[in-house]
Length: 461
Image (tube, rainbow, N blue to C red):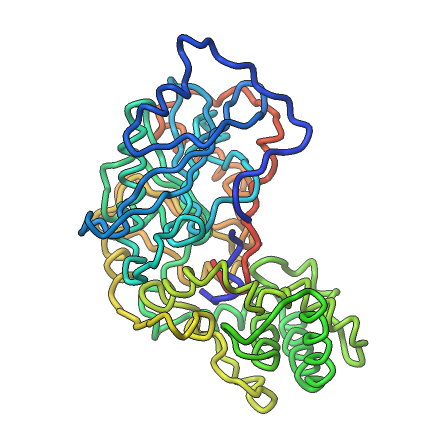
């Protein structure tokens, strides 16, 4: 996954929509809060008003920093619980990053009219041990976090459970199933790539055919135009950063390196978040500096490549550079104009004091499990999303599992955007897995707003 644009991730804390009415308090003799507070390791930080028929709790759960060595200390993992009813199925939403800025029901939660537990990924602040040992940030440790959360809450929610997540959150949900396949009844992973062999990427091939030739050529041309006007754009980037209190020296190095990163990432980010409907917005020859700045800022976001923009995603870049792999997109068409090559590598976005060494094999192991033993898995990808170039692949041993591709879909693809027959089939499968016989009555609430992926820096899944 291209490291910057992957992030559709993911601001801190679930924020309630302004103006939503408070839910009526349940009877004191049957208070859900009391039962939550009785769960060992679980802390109820508070309950916030939300839509009628729901309750919204902020929680933390005590996790070992290293599950193989409980004496290594612990950290408080941040959660939110959107309670619908103890007789309803429960969706564990693995964010892959920090918690979303607002509480919203994911698509499976809406389809099932269920409860939802959102789980912040370890090492994304504040869910990080003090004085962290970064080798404890790996897919098995995170999967074990999720296993313990689900196990702790199953005493309250003993109906069926499914896991879900989008982008890196979908990847995280699949990793959990690989190590704890019996924890839940099913997994629905959206726009989740799997880079089986980091040295054999297919992203260049995808980017050479996505959309149409005119749009692809226009993207290359605007990249070259920007680099030809490097001094002007770099000076504007420097002035912008100074005005906003942003810096470059701690992580990425300087504004020149940051500018190369922004420009190189533009095509990947364009297809990840935008699409053919936006091709006319690509500045052509002779474009003004304002037009160039506006295009690259909307497509990639200049702030993403400052220290402040990168810092929240250091755990992602660390994982990409140690286990997950990353999209190695060629910068050869710009080679004569770039000052800094290979800016897509995750080492560029992790502080140097954090040691990194790529350990191949983790993704191949997950891929082998999906193809030979995976069951009750659903993958939903977008046909125009670069991340779909390397999807999880079902195999001869995959049981009761399905893969769907949204025509023309980008990194926000969902079941609801599938062709009607496929959509009906997929929705019926999710309900069957969760033991819900009939579609729930449609409840229109502010919690049903589109749960689009959080916008992450370019090249993040």
